[in-house]
Amino acid sequence: RVEVATGEVTTLAGSGEDGDADGVGDAAEFCDPAGIAISPDGSALFVADQGNQKMRRVELATGAVTTIAGSGDEGDADGVGDAAEFCEPAAITISPDGGALFVTDQSNHMIRRVEVA
Image (tube, rainbow, N blue to C red; front, top):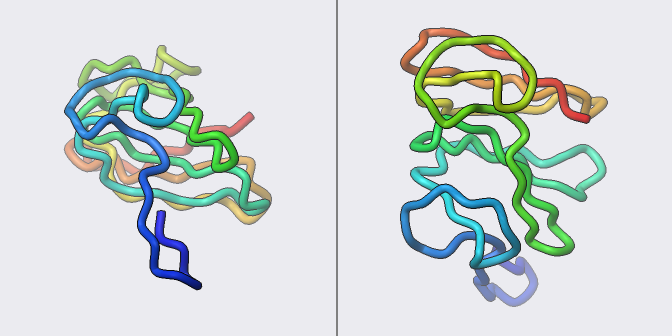
């Protein structure tokens, strides 16, 4: 995170090491996070965790990271939560109402839709 007014840079979430863990702040782990999108209300950040084949949610107020989709295995299965599979999810954007993420599933050559609860 960069505070625009002061230029101060701080880490919101992530240990700095490759890994795959939900958690708060530096207890969370990512592997090659590739794309981000912010919720319309500004409360959450969504991350394409490319190396883990997952979509993650980061609560901006607390730094809490949760997995919202992806099993962690490479694949192209549709499904809810960890029943879904990706292969190198990369760029993401969010619908204006915040109800869905659209993800470039790079190595599957697909555009995927992830419903956001």
